[in-house]
Length: 336
Ligand code: TXA
Ligand code: MG
Image 1 (cartoon, rainbow, N blue to C red):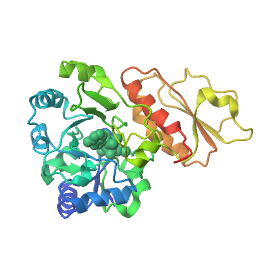
Image 2 (image 1 turned 135 degrees about the vertical axis):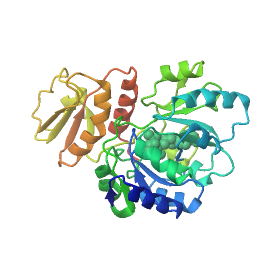
Image 3 (image 1 turned 90 degrees about the vertical axis):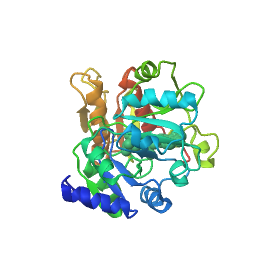
Image 4 (image 1 turned 135 degrees about the horizontal axis):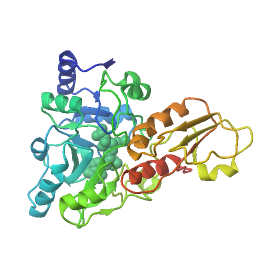
């Protein structure tokens, strides 16, 4: 059930979470599907509700750097000092991977010896995390491999009654999942690009940061072998309707019902008949494109189209995260 934030809603949410139940809540990136990260049974419900493979670890959320710190093992000097620096970017759209402490459920980490930690900035998320005073494991609140939800209605569409409570905190203002950075590798490594860019991370950490998020094969995901970040399937975040880059529009069957998502009006429409043409940002603003992207993909996915054509942008700053998600959404494999 969708409820607006109120003292009664927070009370209900805290009760549910403490009893090992699920609560979907807003964050500035996307909506999360939360459960008590200390409880195997509670975490198991997340995987079940999403249809997510248990080999794919979850991010643990808390209300401050000090509170999430207790769930990590920061005994190594190098990692502790990196953590102290990186966590200055909290609250925010950043998940930080460090060695895991003993208390977090093994189901959260999928048996890895590391954990991803995040302090979101959304006031409703912060209030909930503070009130519940537990580490909350929360993946994006969608069916596995579908487009992440950026509103309470999206969560309801995806998960329906599998979640007893969805807190409605409005649209997620960023609209793309958090940056995931691994601080345990020799060189800090971005496993998923997001609104906190490599440049920001590098200057905050005072050292080089590398990015390693392409070409993780579906077959590796399936066998559970050799995965850097197991959730980073090539095909992910995908609508049901086939999605194709606009530049490939030449090879389309005649009489197809086509929708086009242009990032700006500067992108010319392909010379074919299109039923829907959506422009994400009149001013070519990357924040606006990210903010609307998933919402518009979902909208077009519900129109019974044969094909959705999608734009591209330069891969600077937030453009990196946008294009990462677009590539994953258009990627088709015979296995999936
Ligand atoms: O913005 C976000 O991060 C949202 C909100 C709700 O916080 N959450 C989210 O969670 O996107 P999820 O589960 O959809 O994506 C988490 C990603 C996955 O790609 C997962 O494989 C990776 O983080 N991950 C989590 N723990 C990891 C670990 N210990 N090592 C490597 N990758 C990890
Ligand atoms: Mg997800």
